[in-house]
Length: 430
Ligand SMILES: CC(=O)CC(=O)SCCNC(=O)CCNC(=O)[C@H](O)C(C)(C)COP(=O)(O)OP(=O)(O)OC[C@H]1O[C@@H](n2cnc3c(N)ncnc32)[C@H](O)[C@@H]1OP(=O)(O)O
Image (tube, rainbow, N blue to C red; front, side):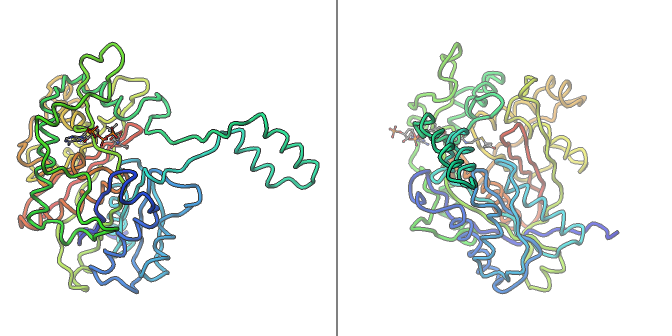
């Protein structure tokens, strides 16, 4: 059995993120992931090379995209002998892909790998209703004219052919991510002002990062976009404060609704990729190491039978990871907490500060405590950049690795909430 090896983050490449039904309206998942991968291959001189594995995924995928990642690799300049496959862990997909690749490198199973993710809400897979779908499948395999006529006769009463549009909702509750987050915001008394301030900071910091050229070697322009399209450098607390609540805005608690289009991440299209490798591979290829991928943890909460918030799993994953790593919540120079909603970031921070939550839910004698907010999402996050579900993990890993490289030393925490009541977290070090 080989001992565990250090895993290097070499770099990343993504395309600018676009607002849904806008600049990338006619691009497919394969087009966008292909563009992000092509940029990575070009930047790190990987053309013609056989990479250990490429692992990526999409949350919303057409049924024809059996193995989207492999198809993208076959269309890329990588050696076609590069194995590639899809995984899916909702909004944690990109980070979970990086964890999978990192673990294979750590165990000596591969020397180098690429993790990625892509999503489009502009090209979402539509399905026809269940009866119609089954009848069409049977019709396709019917052997005799009689069988076909019998099945065709069944089709008429199934009119209209109403498509099933995938909803951004939990199958077991029927509630959208935003509606779940609104319930959590009430539970944690997260106020509107704090959410709008977090959103404003996200836009200001992302804009400042662009101005400094931070993304110059992390991004390839695509279809005319050179910056994330959702970024509103000119937004203000006044503008944000004037927006009407959209989640939790109906029902008995409507008066207390606080979540708006401004403090919720928008529906977004985009793709990202990250290059991970063993120390030896990096040295042999003369590629500098940005950061080391050191710890990870995935947790799940019972939001169906219990009272845990759908997007609160990172509140459980992080302390478990800290305990294994022998670290405190304050031992970090950067915190990258994915901003699905400002309220979910603030509820997570409130949970870590709560003596009751930490004792009753985490079994800790003392709360994890608060973090220095100046170290949180220092170059903006999903509220400003947008959130193409599976692509967010790659954006965050590459951003944090570069921040640590620029600082020269330090440690960063990644926390991503995901649908299904799951949370994916990791630690990068330099
Ligand atoms: C999936 C997982 O596994 C885990 C997760 O991450 S959960 C998160 C998943 N993602 C989501 O659930 C997406 C949530 N977001 C949405 O559904 C939609 O973006 C939304 C319903 C919140 C808003 O949709 P919309 O109404 O089409 O947004 P949009 O038209 O852009 O904005 C509405 C208004 O607010 C304004 N606005 C939005 N952001 C603003 C800002 N930062 N500053 C100023 N104004 C802003 C817009 O200009 C617009 O104003 P007008 O009506 O005057 O044009």
